Image (cartoon, rainbow, N blue to C red; front, side, top):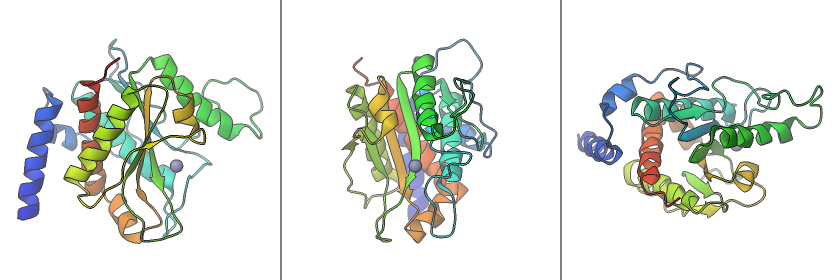
Length: 247
Ligand SMILES: [Zn+2]
């Protein structure tokens, strides 16, 4: 019961912050399953405000959970939910991919991508965001660490636009407040090893949603219920941060 009250309070708080015309529960009910999202946003002429990027895809599975779960699948599932919530609530959002596919040949630049698949895959995610002229790029990933006890969501931000810090702080904060009270992680500046943050010129963050090397967290991350909570927190934090962008 205590938990129910806590979540009810969280939903009310989030819906106030988001100032959306839609009913938040309607948005959640409207969330469809993996593969049902759309790369294009809502289809109107509104400019794309946010690009959501489910990491990896196709032959690149990303990291592998203790039970064989592939990161790319969880990334896609969470990313679709975030995108759907934003679109349902009037924030035009688009996905870099809405199915299990790699993006190296998204623009058909080369005839042969042998040995450059990973480079082009990452390059095209940044290009997609740049060409969409979005205000914020959000890449969704899952983490892995040798110590199985390590857990918790971690947000990295791009050093190229100061609004990245606003978005990263909000996401880290919302998740701590509503899902992971024990999470004391602080946002981290993305180094040159995080290509999509290093190369993006607009505000950009990368969300490591949790550790697939932690079997308890992995079990949670696999459930629809937890993914929805996570997506709601991320979407609310995005909305909140967009309203506070300086540029
Ligand atoms: Zn990843």
